Amino acid sequence: MLRELLPKSQAAAAPISPVAHSLLGKHILSVDMFTKEHLNEIFNLAQMLKSRVAKDRPLDDFLRGKIMASIFYEVSTRTSCSFAAAMQRLGGRVIYMDQTSSSVKKGETLEDSIAVMAGYSDVIVLRHPEPGAVSRAANHSRKPILNAGDGVGEHPTQALLDIFTIREEIGTVNGLTITMVGDLKNGRTVHSLARLLTLYNITLQYVSPPNLGMPEEIVRYLASKGVLQKTMSSMEDALPTTDVLYMTRIQKERFASEEEYQKACGHFVVTPKLMTLASRRTIVMHPLPRVFEISKEFDSDPRAAYFRQAEYGMYVRMALLAMVVGARN
Ligand code: NCD
Image 1 (spheres, rainbow, N blue to C red):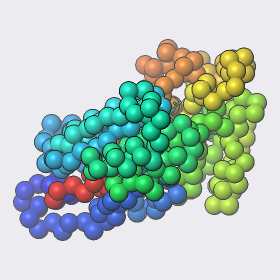
Image 2: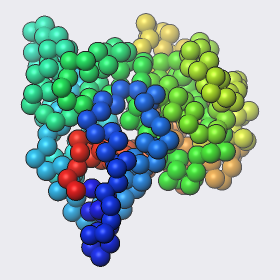
Image 3: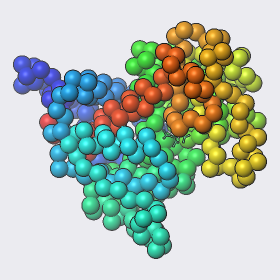
Image 4: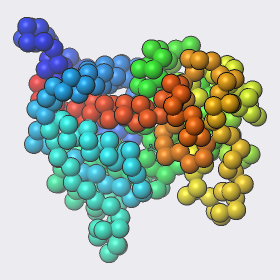
């Protein structure tokens, strides 16, 4: 697959990278499975695919004839559409299933649905509201499953695209201070990102409304890996030392009542005025969707990286699909 990306003169002589197949046929369930080598492999491929797309070069030989099953038991815009776009740009096709228009309505179990969909497809992308459900489903799947978010659990492909974004925007991850803001208790993207960042040398700062801090288990895990973590009470305190400001949505669907949700809202909001406290090189990220936590007036600031981040997600998912499904050389 890597050979294809090289100019013709070099292509014949270029060896096929053995690492490119390191994820072949593997489930992607948690960030814990990744080594630094995996990440470099994924990011290098994503970068090459990005430049091929920019140059309008054909890529549809990669996964021609392959089928991806897109199964979302929870709503999604970016994850489902960027996976579908990724598969189609590589020449593959997509079939869809969700909980409202399928036999889930008749009482079919997740395990049964997955066993069936595995027979129709070459790879499955699955989102489910219950933490651990995607791993359970993987035990019933003959085909690789990519976790597209399991409740408040993990969102490994988002963490990959988040780190790819930092690399693309800043050039490096090591040495940076990353400030995570918002619903750190229920947000699966920060759970996966914090864990994956243990592969780098970074400092983490946390800013969250009362009772929505980073889960103790994750704080302990990071501490055991030597990551310096600081909990701060305001964005004003955190911004001067921040290289990457990672904003998150208050996860409304995880709250017991509207009243409790409302109490958690409005504490921390990015505005052009607030961002005068940050460096000109600080980038602002958000997995999206945003609700109130970044004001629209900030969108035109060059430091607003969140829409670029969403696009990077497609290239990272192209790389992952090519590696897991096994692209033609
Ligand atoms: C996130 C998710 O679904 O966890 N969105 C995404 O995948 N880009 C974040 C969120 O819903 O707040």
